[in-house]
Image 1 (tube, rainbow, N blue to C red):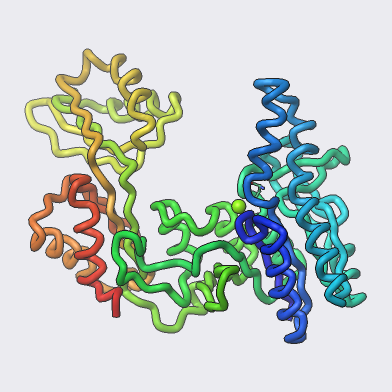
Image 2 (image 1 turned 180 degrees about the vertical axis):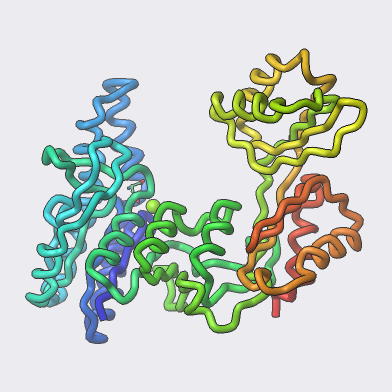
Length: 401
Ligand code: ASP
Ligand code: MG
């Protein structure tokens, strides 16, 4: 097999840890696999480099920033290659440029355009373990670019896609993807497998295991992703095509987002165009509106409720000033939480939503807003019941079994 292994900042956080990573890579090699390794900068390194730049300028030149930041990953790749060679393994370190990674022009937030597979492919054929510096490439002008914070995951997935690797393993300091946050529900179980779409829903809802952009890329390129810990031998969680998941559980996981605020617009003029005016104005001020509920109007008035990230509430207030004439009163509620139930199995089953509502009723928790999609049910509730709701739902769908 060809396996891409990516090690994040904490996994290569000091020299001892790099030595451990070398052992793990060597073990995979000993099992008879071809290995391409992608590494992050040692933890804290990228931040340190950013601070250095800020010593000189509040708004440092972006081309130079890319050159500066890309050096963090280069250090790790060179060190890991040296360690592997010392252990008797053939290994070669490559920068993004040497690995044939071509991006668009956007300095400090570039996107990978394509990868020339030849340099890495040849090196693997010659029996090398290839150790690539993550998070970087070059643009068409031959300038070094970086992919934005956390971009090494993207490097790994893109390489796995371009070289048609059998597996792309992302090593971090957590064991994989859990049915819910184990800090809230200690009975949470690590999932063996989950589909790309479920992972995307869970990630955007706060299960911060993998960067969303890299899951999207993996889905697009059909890369089998595994997220696992570099500190133990547990197998981790496979993120793959829905077809590869034989037994589709009704519900795979429960996500919690406490970082929500609810805005209630009362006595809104009930006329064509009003929703368009309000939500266009919010969009222009870059407010990320999530759920929206409008109630049926009466006497020419209606009520519109929506949720936004807490950090954007001041911007919402600014926008709403402009609608004083068309809205009677506005209520802002900060202490709300969004609890979501995610699972591909609910596509083909009924009663999943009803069970969620019954569970809330049993706990005496009031549901303030509801929204559903093919694979997700979200409920907005009072923040003080958030943990209780997660635990009750986790039990109701038997995720601890
Ligand atoms: N070193 C970069 C960062 O800290 C990229 C990465 O770790 O993925 O954001
Ligand atoms: Mg990282």
